[in-house]
Length: 305
Image 1 (spheres, rainbow, N blue to C red):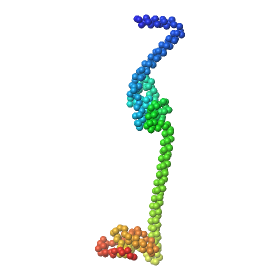
Image 2: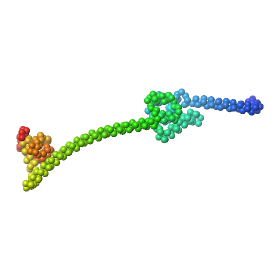
Image 3: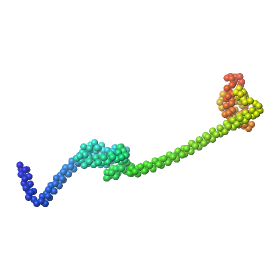
């Protein structure tokens, strides 16, 4: 009853005021009510978990990390500890908190940058900060300084791309030079192998020419070409001569006797390689009896012609 009487009296007082004074009183009361509302909102905002001391970011630790999730990066741009302040913990306050609304806006910008291929999740700190400098102004000064102290480049992503492109081009040129040198080395080795093969082919050709000439002479003199049996007999005859005259041992593999025989051919102006002589002697070896050593002990080779 007392409050009602006071309200009636205050209404009568307002009704007696001039219009200008009444409007001034109204404006004063509205501002007072607004200030009280703002003070209450600020008090509530300051009391929420994300504005407590333990929610502050530890930039020295965060800039040591090799990468950040995009949600962690958003929290760091707001100077908050990502382990405490993250989208899961902030989302329930979006309708009543200015900080939560700002967090939501930044999260939306970052998500769209990821969709456009400008960012990746997780992302390297240098790449994110270089991108974020022009999006979230200002970024916490301590965050940027800590990143620089840890050697993180804050160059823009376009400059980073140009730098990486330059380094790739340099590496490509170096690799091309190494490949060129390798090709030259291989080419030199291949040329040497070709020269060696050519020399062997040339020797074989000379031997074939000698055989062809001998065959032509035999044909011209009325002799018939050697039959298989005659060829085998000649190879066996050559083997016996090599054993007796040059100390050739058919069971030793490589013998110096073949070189001596080749040298004797050279003295006569004929070309007969060691390999060709060895082939004929090996062919004659097929016709020796298995106990030829017991039947016939060859004389030792003295080296005299």
